[in-house]
Length: 388
Image (cartoon, rainbow, N blue to C red; front, side, top):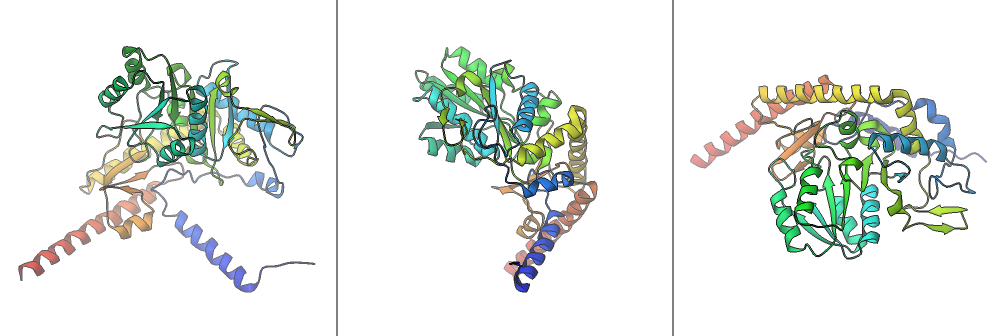
């Protein structure tokens, strides 16, 4: 028997697809790459690929992409200078799961540890801390969104008898500020704190920061014990995904054998999307390190262009060094909704991700200039009414 969509449902789907295509043209406020082409992989969408359990251990569920996932992990282990023969990881559903895994490992190592994270940290971290029932202390930030190291020093001094679980941001959500592992390590040494674990949330900036060897460094040679990135942000994927790497000797405290799937499950979710690792593998193989570097440099050049255009119309726009994120005073709600612009307190941002064009930047800047003039006219009209 053939089953088909009813006409009303078919029309609804068609309308949704048209709307999605239109909204994709005005999408500059969130860190999502838009320039990928995975059409060669479309036949695989007819298969239920499931990378259940540990990606480095065979499973009786053999309809998977585990072999390609292993190559993806090896690529990032090399990129982040993971210790030879002492690293492990897996492709996650996104940066939030990677953060959860890093904190999970840290809790197993230091059950009485305290998590220190800045007030600019991604909202998922506090949720993960609650899920894991961890104690935590929020550290103030500097104006640019980077951690306030003096405040960190004072908080650590007050609790120096407790193990430290440090959550370092390698690109904060709103301003793409990077916490300095060198400063953090110095404070830990000064206070003679031996029991510590450092997890790096490098969701957006981690990949291109490592490729371009940006400062401050954050990889395993700089003291990281685990690193989480997002795959759908800089590299690009139709399905949200990410990756977490951790020192293998730490991970081995967690896994347990699962006879049903014939493998060891050391992951958060168990069943994992088998398509995402293929997208990441395809992009890495197609672009290579040089192609990914060029991709990053193109985005940085576009960010410089966008800053110039915004400042040319009198907008007080700024960005952190080597950032793709441009921060400026929030525009009207109408403009924020049209361009899907993230806003916090009085500040908004746009992010010059792969796939964003100069044409889109020019269109946005023109609309922002008109929006500013409209807001000025409304404010003037209101003052005149009050004076009557």
